[in-house]
Amino acid sequence: MIKLAGMTWDHARAYDCLVAASDRFASERGIELSWARRSLQAFADEPIIDIAKAYDLVILDHPHVGQIAETGCLLALPDFPDPAETSLGGSVESYVWKGKTWSYPIDAACQMAVARADLWGAFPKHWEDVLDTPEQFNIVTPLKPVDAFDLMLTHLASRGEEGLPVSAEAFCSEENGLYSLKILKALFKMGPSEQADWNPIKVLEILSTTDAFTASPALFGYINYARPGFRPRQLTYRDLPTFRGSSARRGILGGAGIGVSAFCKHPEEAIAFAQWVTSEEIQSSTYIENEGQPAHLGTWNRLRHEPRYAGFLDGAYETITNAWTRPRDEWFLHFVDDVCEIFPDFFLKDRSEEVMLADINALFRKHTN
Image 1 (cartoon, rainbow, N blue to C red):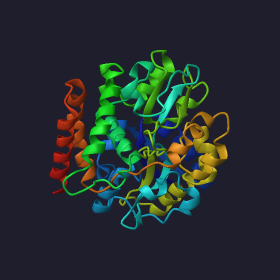
Image 2: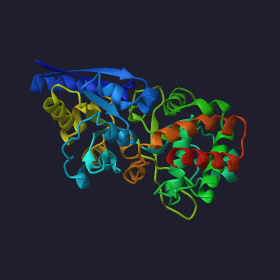
Image 3: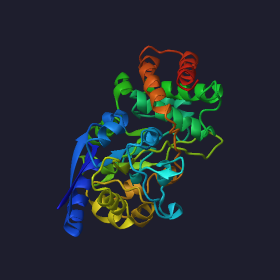
């Protein structure tokens, strides 16, 4: 029997579903797959080339595709079938770089809002509400540096700056950059200072196991917390707030893709699994039934009103179908790393929005000029 090894990340959403799918694939195709796990932070940060040298299949984040193309550490794959009918929020296209497909979307996510199903309190309709009447809301936001910067990107795209960077000298405009940072600072002041070190999983755990807060206005969604019985308190997702005078919701696209190592000794079999596990048939059955978060548009359309999944698939459907893809150029991840180094002081030392934006643009020039 041919044996393949894969690397994913450490959460039921990313592991249980792959194990179940691999068991089914083995019984149907006679090919055995095993999966190792790395942390969520390593999922975002670890160079794909290091993983590709040790594993046949890699679950990865789409901002890595620029580096993947440059290093050639993954195989270019056959094009994903019919993106117009299969791609959710640009998920298929996010793994295409310089005309080649480097991964298939296996998991789709974006920043969206979430609330306790049984504590539906006041919720900001517009982002400006957190500036004008913060006392009305009992909300919490994951503001770990990478999540804070991602929310800044969501704000920028929602205010029309989708083609980042805006120039050779500035990553974003002064008007929109300062506006977003002002909202981020307001969100920080509305909750505990520990928010500056909380990621989406931490916030979802707090919301689903305590009564401390009623909602979060923006985080990367996890389908598991909307499933009945996953945690003591069920959560329901909803569309992001908008900016006054605009209906645009351009939540930054997340999720994961599945790629095949260029060092794989059985590439045809590995590609066959990648195609099979990302098909609508498997995404709508074995994958989602075992804690998976599907990426196939057909699955979302088929199951969005199914009671087991509606709290996620239907609640933020408009937001995710209009998700925005961040830059994927090779310089971008190094730039993000440096921006994340300065975000804690913006919150914890109350640095001004003007100084913070100047530093962000300086770091952008450092990585691109």
